[in-house]
Image (cartoon, rainbow, N blue to C red; front, top):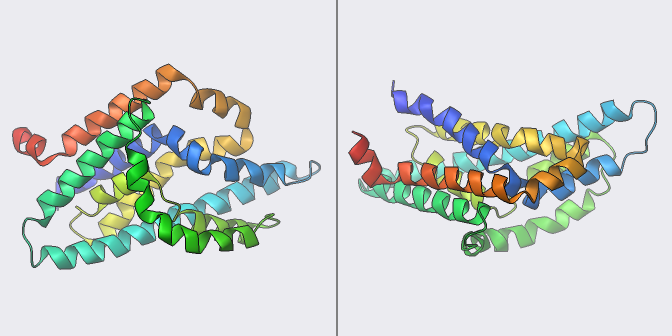
Length: 229
C-alpha cells in the first residue's frame, strides 16, 4: 500500500474546503435557488435539506465519474509513456497555483483554463434548464449530476491531481473527497445565502485561502516532490 495514497484524500478534502468561495461563485446561485423555489410552510426545512443533499450528491457523483474517465485514459497512456506522471503532476501543481491566484484576486488566468470545458457545457446546459424549477429530489439529483460538468478551474486542478493516483478507484475517491470538501459551503448557501455572500466578498479570507492553494500547488510540483524525498 502506498501511504501517499491515503494522504491525498484529506488533502483533496482540504482543497475543496479552501476553494469553497470559488464553488460559491460557480454553483452557489443554483444551490440557493433550490431553497428559494420552495414554498415556506410545514416541512420546509426537510424538503430544503432533501433537495440540497440530492443536488450535491449528483454534483459529487459527476466529479467521481469524470475522475474515473480521466484515470482510465491516463493509466492507459502511462503504460506507454513513463514521463506522463511528471507531466500530470506539473499540470496539477500549476493549475492549483492558478486557482490560488484567482482566489486571492491577484490574477484571473484560470478563466482561460475553464474555457476548455465550454463546448461540452454548451451541449449540456440546455438540459439543466429543463429541470427547473426543481420540485422533488429526483430532479435535484439530475440537475446536480449535470451541474458537475460545469467548467470549473478548481475541479480541473483537482482532476489533474486525481489522475496521478495509482488506480482508477483511488482517482474517483480523490474527487469524491474533494467534492465533500465543497459540501459545507454549498449546503450553507442554501441555508444561509446572505452570510455566505459576505464571506465570499471578504478580502482577507480570499487572500488567505488563495495563498494556501498556491502552497498546495507548489507542493504538488515534481521539483518539490524530489526535494521532499
